Length: 422
Image (cartoon, rainbow, N blue to C red; front, side, top):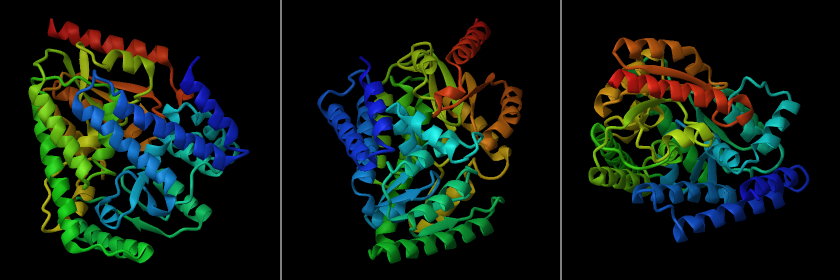
């Protein structure tokens, strides 16, 4: 019997009729999985990747168990002020990813279709909206979101603000990448901090914020050093761990846990063996539950993901003596802000840093930014001599992707890399 599928079926069945019971059951399942991470961790994973699995699970559990101390945020929202105020931030992508891994996303996707949400919208957002409509998602304390990167933010968060009748704060990020834009966003982040203080009644001191941004800076420095080690070494791992890094480099950035994780990553890879496996630069989300991707890239001596742009795009130099400007610069100068040129430049630089042999642009269903820029990225990367595959699929809704097609295209790409090496 497939226990995960059975468990997911219970959640899908209970949510429309008894949502609070479904939530308690979901929490019990996640707590059991968290205990399993501690008692019987996957010994094939290095210590850093075993550690991060528990860290991200802890955030999900706190968000579901104590929503009165949690805030719903968009993925690119700087969360250092929230952690200083004792608030647990969680993103739509995090919760939806866990629901998909629990194999109960289908009912929530169908719920949004019944409510008239267009199927062209990102499936992470549609899954979360469906879970909220079913009553599975508890009411958080407040919402903070930004215009950066995902157009789904501008539909999802205003809708949920009205649904839950809770306060929300919006950060608009200018398209231009200059110091004027940084100053503007820094001002908005100061206003966001005042908003958080007002909603929670807890102070966010400048000293505590500087300490948090200092942790962000050190985490970013460790991660850049980790990427440089990829040029020669391969750290054993799976694609799920790579997706965990997306959350530690955004939602959890500024925490002791994120700093510890990146430091552990660097220590682990420095002890890892040298490898001639193909290094793949991955652009956009990773379909970490899709079987053809898992079987080809998990613990593989043939090929592995050396870097993902949704992780490294935020790892820019920071100065904790100017915390608001540092957080603002992360947003303004993100590779996901503005046109495709900035994202391409970051990709080219990271390909050189990691010694990438090829790149995969994952054209995630509903992500208009990546879908529109995919061919531009492919042309630019191949113009620099980096073979690039555009892989169509859906990282959250299995019905929008074909395992057979993904397997065929990944195999053909890897065979092409092998032929070029020969």
